[in-house]
Image 1 (tube, rainbow, N blue to C red):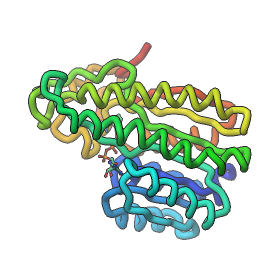
Image 2: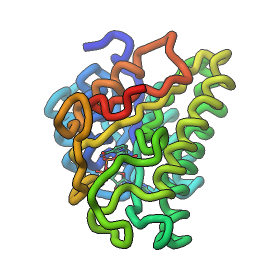
Image 3: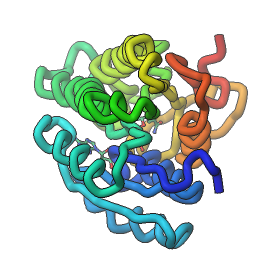
Length: 255
Ligand SMILES: NC(=O)c1ccc[n+]([C@@H]2O[C@H](COP(=O)([O-])OP(=O)(O)OC[C@H]3O[C@@H](n4cnc5c(N)ncnc54)[C@H](O)[C@@H]3O)[C@@H](O)[C@H]2O)c1
């Protein structure tokens, strides 16, 4: 149990499965209360959390993080219930694989609005006024190495959602998340708030199903959701780290 995380209140978006679920479970193991947020049913994650630590409380919200009013409600009710909001993991994301030639406006706006605007909305709602008033808080934004290097090479086709590499809207949204992270870090350090990003490489989850990664990297395996959750726990308790992008990518984006 990590003393710094014990009895804290953590919101994790996109926590019905994958990296979000693993992060929620890992934070609960360290003693944090958990707020699950997803459009999908979160029952499995909730049960897994209570298995690893029956002493924490779990709240669940089935909302779409593209909707401002829903996000503001989650944050308000979290503070009402737990008395604070200590950690926000902006993890929910979508990934269109259509290439520049084929991507539509609809796909563009879905990825940008979910990945980038969702991160903006949750960060704004948590920081102002709650974290600022508390003079503490940790924002952890899950970006991607796509936001650093424009997407990995894969052998998929760019004219289909089946197996193509992550698309231009995804890369742009994740690059935006990285810039937003640095911007927020500079703004909120004086309020005792840290804002960092984790940039995962290829991780075996629903989002990467069917993608044929070449694994041209130092550590020759796909990562696991737990590999990312370890980094989430670290950043949730790191007080003198802010504005950083921690690549957890098996050495696929060294440099
Ligand atoms: N898996 C990878 O290789 C990889 C690599 C880099 C970055 N990431 C990022 O990690 C994060 C988690 O992805 P994952 O790999 O666990 O995939 P995933 O698809 O298993 O998880 C994403 C979750 O976000 C939820 N979600 C999507 N849109 C939402 C919305 N509008 N409102 C609420 N919830 C929504 C989904 O329902 C799902 O549960 C994403 O931001 C993704 O871009 C993943």
